[in-house]
Amino acid sequence: MLEFSGPVWRILFLSQIDAPLAPAKAPEGRFHYAGQTALYASLSAEGAGVAIRRYVSDGDPPRVLQRARITKARLMDLSGRPDVSIVWQDIHDAQGCSPTWQCSDEARAMGADGLLYSSRSRPELSHVVLFNISPALIRTDASATEWIPSYS
Image 1 (cartoon, rainbow, N blue to C red):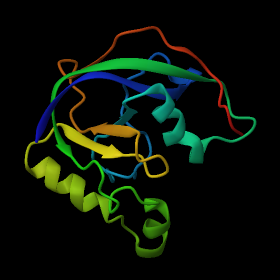
Image 2 (cartoon, rainbow, N blue to C red):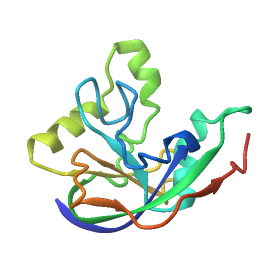
Image 3 (cartoon, rainbow, N blue to C red):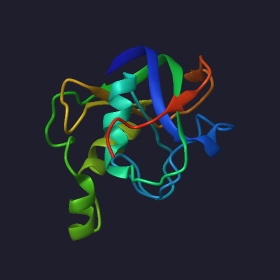
C-alpha cells in the first residue's frame, strides 16, 4: 500500500458543479457495484479526458474540468496491471460482473482508501478511485474551468 498526496482532475457536467466531489452515480463501474462508494479521478487533466472518452457524445451538455487535491490517501497500487485496465463493460455485459471488482473488494477489505491504476488506452497515464471521500482525504483546490473535448 502506498500513501498518495497530490492533485487529481475530474471532468463533470456543468450541472454537477455544486457537488464536484460527489461519488459516481452509476450503480456499477470499473471498481464499484451497487452500494459501494467510488470517486474516479485522474492524475492529469489529459488523463481525465482520456478516461471519459468512451462516455462523450456530440450534443452532450457542457462539461467542466475540476482539480482537487488528495492528502495522505492509502492506495493499493495496481499500476501496470493489464488485468485491471480492461474494457470491463464488455465482460460485465457477458458475465454479469466485472473481474476488476475482485481487486477493489480486496483493497476495501484491507482498509485502503482507494486504488491507483493505469489508463487502458494510454498506460503512461494514471487514474485513481477513492472509496473514502472524506474531506480529510480530498478537496477541490481550484475553480472549475470549461472543458471541450479534443475529439468527438
